Amino acid sequence: MRIVLQNLTKAFPSRNKKSNEEVIAVNNFNFEIPDGKLIGLLGPSGCGKSTTLYMISGLLKPTSGRILFGDDDVTELSTENRGIGLVFQNYALYPHMTVKQNIMFPLQNLKGQDKMTKEQMLERTQGAARLVQIDGLLDRKPSELSGGQQQRVAIARALVKMPRVLLLDEPLSNLDARLRLQTREEIRRIQQETKITTVFVTHDQEEAMSISDMIVVMKTGIVQQIGKPQDVYDDPANLFVAKFLGTPPINVFEGSVKNDMLYVGSDPVLAIKGVADQAVTVGIRPEGFILDEEGPLRCKPVNVEVMGRDVSVVSTHDASSNPFVRSIINADNKIDVTREYVRYGIKSHKIFIFNKETEERIYFEVK
Ligand code: ADP
Ligand code: MG
Image (tube, rainbow, N blue to C red; front, top):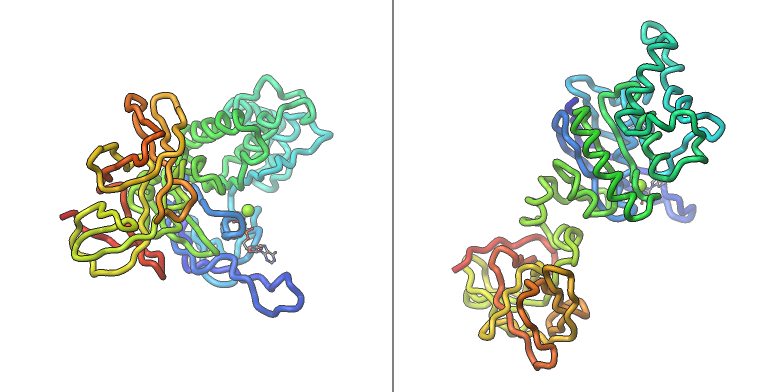
């Protein structure tokens, strides 16, 4: 099911009684979610992810704008009639019911021509349980399950009505690190098997990047960038997006452009074309550094952290906005941290420049 969000806006009255200013939780969101894809809605806490999801689900009415499922305008339609499955961070299972009863529950409320026989309901329940691989646990109570298993039950419950759209709000946040990894792979597999159009909300960039067909990066209610995870990573539209994606994060420096030369502090790192002389903010991805005795970027080495195949070189630079500069270098290279400087060349596709005031990307050509 293709979902269209048109000028979607949600304003809340301020929670602060002394102020009359409203909170624009979602500000003019426009996006066409393609059929059968998994979309990661990504951004820091409070940026409007849940509000967007709740508007798609019908739990919240937009202040303005429209939502279409396929060609149907569902803006005024109730949650029950939208054909959606919802999964929240806290699994919200009924504690006194078995797994089977929990999953079957949404089917028991179906009315009219949708009403099912006991056998049909059981078959559907078993199908959904098999899909999330908990079919051996149907007679247990939720308290007898691990967090990961409980979340699978919640996903099965969301899928049992065969929704047109699956909406997940931070579904992995209550799980420990290992289960989080495993369950996110599961969600990806289930989505690919069922081909249900899915919106997955998370504040965890790695999570979103790893399972999404496309990501939507939001900040203070405003969409910053939409694209395939790798494309957004490789080509961030602004400093916020560049900083939000990637671990270790991008290195940020004070820099300038002068006479077709890009400087980091006073180090001339790259000859470029097409940018007027100005002070800029420079971002360099950790994998963008090349060890080079003659390289233009001079950092003071502090420490080397071994990460298996690679090492992370921790250093300092006067123009760095962060206390440390991190580069990722192949472990075959030997770095002597007692030296005064470690010198780098920079890969031209791993360095970005941004307007100092607006923080928008400034595009350049390599000379
Ligand atoms: P996220 O899910 O990205 O963390 P939310 O969508 O929950 O963010 O919230 C976006 C903004 O809207 C926040 O500033 C939040 O405080 C505000 N907000 C959310 N719900 C309400 C509400 N019911 N009343 C007032 N403000 C709200
Ligand atoms: Mg939220």
